[in-house]
Image (cartoon, rainbow, N blue to C red; front, side, top):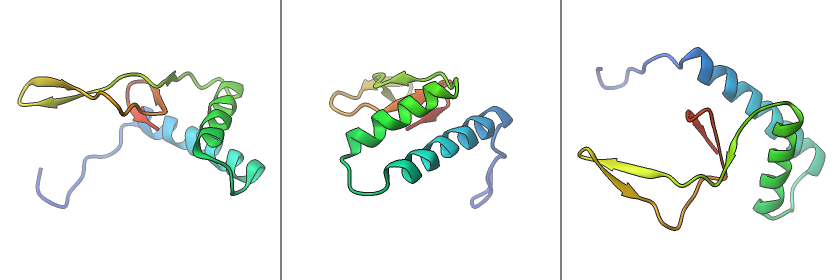
Amino acid sequence: MERGTFEPIPAEVEWVGRRVIGCAITVHRTLGPGYKESIYVEALCLEMESRGIHFERETPITVLYKEREIPVQRRRPDAGLFRRVVL
């Protein structure tokens, strides 16, 4: 791939991304600013559950370096969807 060119986003990832963004907008409009991140994460998870979006919370991740896995110890994503989208 040439520098500055990108592959199209797969349809499944686009679909999930649009649904999650919709959930995030709903949470933002409902709660507004001023809460700690943990409150927004919990509200986003509740919103995704209410819409039937399946996700995993704080799933451990690894980084691949030259075909070897490096476990990431202290940082976990808030949620992962379909093993394609990380929040």
